[in-house]
Image 1 (cartoon, one colour):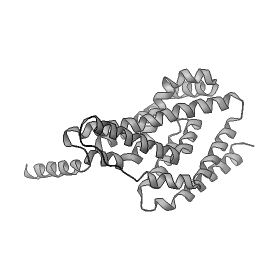
Image 2 (cartoon, one colour; image 1 turned 60 degrees about the vertical axis):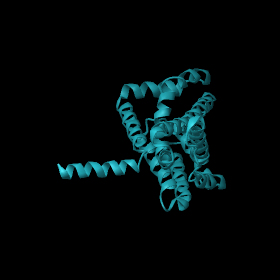
Image 3 (cartoon, one colour; image 1 turned 90 degrees about the vertical axis):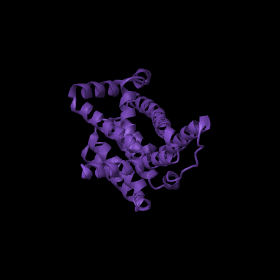
Image 4 (cartoon, one colour; image 1 turned 180 degrees about the horizontal axis):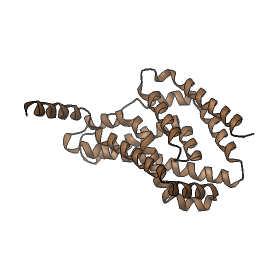
Amino acid sequence: MTDRSSAVRRMGVTLAWRPEWPVAVIVVMAWVALIAIHASSSMQGAHAAHVGAAAPTALLAAVGGWALVSWALMSVAMMVPVTLPAVRHVGLNSIRRRRRRAMALYAASYVAVWVAFGVLALVLVAALRSTGPDERLLVLGTLVIAALWQLTRWKRRAVVACQRTVPLPPTGWRADAGCVRFGVRQAGRCVVSCGPLMLLMAVIGHGNLVVMAALTVGIVAERRTSIRGRLAVPVGGALAAAAVWTVLFSGAT
């Protein structure tokens, strides 16, 4: 019993210094949901057929339902892991009695920006599809854009900016507004940094879990490892290699 009590106390201390753990659990749940959706072949086939044939006006309705839910899950699974340090900052710098509220406001505002980006991305992709370009050319073009973006100074500046934090008001509506403002600001920086990569996901869809996992690992490594400053070029090279593979083996011309 003593050992068990000691282990419980140690776990409690660890969780107290890692207040972002409930958000991390939500990320895991989002991945589980996406895997379950992927495993359902009937849902996946119906969704792919619908998106592939949709005109922009038809997609506007779809974005309000299934497509929006899928994008929101994908945003949580892929982009929230990047912002967990910021969630921790919000939790540790908020009064204990309002810690969960502060983290929830931050995370909700962060995801809301990505959902708004997703609406624009999905409508843009549907508009491009309605003009009749080959699907492989659409993938190829998005890969080239994402690869080139990795080499720009705007990308590098956004990655650095994502590490910044802000002081948060302690109580009242100012505290809530501060958490929302911080979440929107961080999400905006992430959109600048990772928008082309998420645009690629809007093109290929949430059903490609391998690409999702690879991009998530690359994004997290780019932000949260000691070598993050040296990963932009390798990630860009990997995207360029994927573009070459698309040309050579997928028949895009």
